[in-house]
Length: 231
Image 1: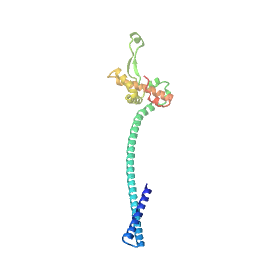
Image 2: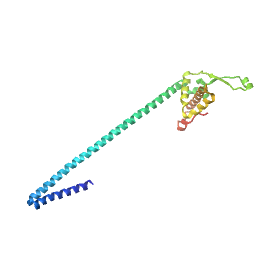
Image 3: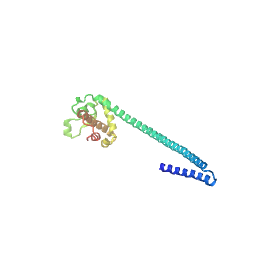
Image 4: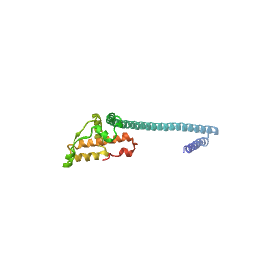
């Protein structure tokens, strides 16, 4: 398209220069050589003007393109800055969650020590002191048919281990996978002691899950990670 325009302009300039020469020769009776020189000078002037204006126009187009590129670069820089701020915010939230989880997990790992000391999840649960005392008499239970009377926690084990498990249970109680179980136990036992007992029950189940994870070393997969604790 630009080549066709250049050819058209060149033809127009030749016609204009020829017309000027013809007018001088025919209309003003100027000799042939002078008319030809004037026509050639007019053609040269028009060619120079077209070249200079074309260069200026191209320079203006380049300037506009550079300005557009600069605006695009500035927009890209703003977008990169916004993405960086969002990434920093996400990293901060992830780091906070990791630190919170580590604050609960580190005491648990330190207090449990060698998991091979515990031959079953019941042994580990008993070591944590999360098992309630049971006040019962075998004879009385058979005769009266009364259920076992469960007292407060035995609290025989390390207190920091119980604290870490209880913190993990409190965090798990609001998770969608465990919330329904927690709320069901809480409602069943009533407002006065339901929440505490539900947290202890969830902490006990988490202790059993920890024993299985540390002893069986199952592969971590989405299905295992998202599976709720068994009732």
